[in-house]
Image (cartoon, rainbow, N blue to C red; front, side):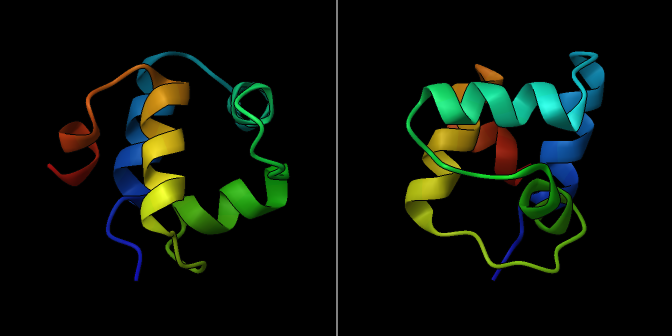
Length: 69
């Protein structure tokens, strides 16, 4: 499932990051993700693993719990 997609988008926009910029941050954390995949995550079209949620939190520099609010 994907409960975090809308919150990822909200936090990304709040930090004034483009999808490309967030993807770059994820790539630096050794997660090979494309902009298209991030768009699907934000739209809740693609499932997100627990490991990916951890990486998204790190890339956005937020506590993992913020992604589930």
